[in-house]
Image (cartoon, rainbow, N blue to C red):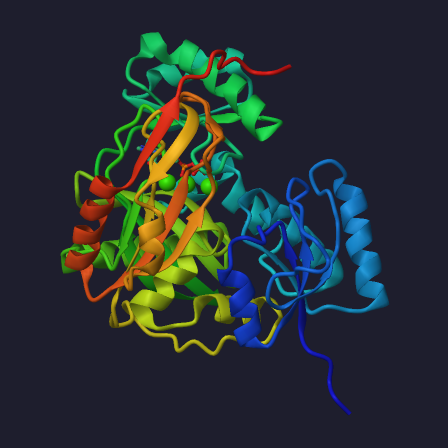
Length: 425
Ligand code: ADP
Ligand code: CA
Ligand code: CA
Ligand code: CA
């Protein structure tokens, strides 16, 4: 008799972002998709590998969502539950724990998702951590005035840099804390605390890893620019990064030790760090998931040839990825990049120049367009979303840099003025 195909519940993945769906197809895994409540996914046009939709609202009714998952499991068992959406990582870890499925466990998920807990655990393990203060109420802001300025103020449960703001002086701290609390409430729905931490001066990098039974395999290190604030929009991602061997080894050691400190023994991780003073790695955060809604798969597969999404999904289904454990990074087979088109203004979008031609460019894998003519971009620090991602592959790092210089020149968004930028409601 045929054994049923392994099945994973995939929580809150946008159907328009293809990498993880295609990875499931290659891994021979069926997906039960839990669509984002704000995304319309129709039963007759399902993404690759999706065999079923399961509608849950894990934010509005967490207990009900857990219950519905359990009922689905009892009717027809699945092998795992997984997400790439950072705020859903604790829910997924809890669901897996309750159902006895593979996962990192509730406690490790908390450390990876709550920036206060993450900082405390990294510091307790003796890793490189900037001076920081956790604020559980905005009224406590003065406790952070003793830090060395500039500092960065951010929501404990933030993602996509939402609300993250630099404060240059102790005099500006109160108003920045109030603003971050207020704007984060607006954008994230609910805020239960902030972290204030010393500004880490130095270039930024992202590290993609896969862990199995406590063995951490670091796959790629990529350059993420050198954003100076006061707000931190995402920009470029180019891998592999050019780093001196000693710095690269320090990054590998720090990231490996961070997995241990946070108790992340299995599955993919996406780590962001800055090299303080250009040499010493300080983690910004570690996400217990494939990064960038799947962009990390594009980067890892382009640089190493490893099918990151398929491997990670197989791990999530308890199928064992079979990645060889070795020291050091896999030898690169190419270069990969992501370019996030900057808004470059605000108002009503009237035209986006330079994107269409890219769809036929042999270097380009995908253009993911999220803003279109007619959409309104609010002025910063309000965040409307990124206009587009351009994912590309190249022979080497120099070609990624040249391509990004070309994109900087060729992509341009035109705006018309909008009378009122105020919030509704
Ligand atoms: P999020 O989860 O919202 O992405 P991060 O902690 O990754 O929050 O912060 C978003 C961005 O803000 C980082 O990518 C980095 O550019 C900047 N940033 C955050 N904390 C610091 C810091 N302590 N020093 C310098 N830059 C920081
Ligand atoms: Ca994050
Ligand atoms: Ca981040
Ligand atoms: Ca970032």
